[in-house]
Image 1 (cartoon, rainbow, N blue to C red):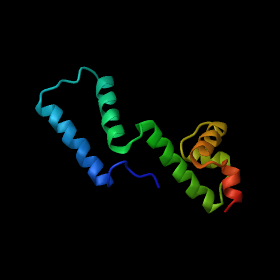
Image 2: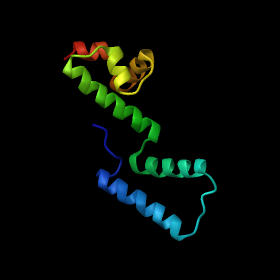
Image 3: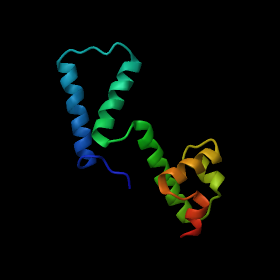
Length: 109
């Protein structure tokens, strides 16, 4: 399972809200939604060691591993179930994260 860089998820969340509160109390204004999105992403990356996008990929791959272990769905169905619109992209990212293609992962079970 994917874990945060420092301590528990509770610590990550507490740290995140402490930073947000500090900035609000310092009256730093966020000029746009994009700036807010960027700041939140940076806070989460600092807390977890990965970008929000990388974290999402890891969550999707972890869920796909669970579905593969169940053994009752095709790889195309699993890819769609975890949020990939393209099975080839799913296979590429699965291999990058696990070192195996989804089919080889299933065969190794």
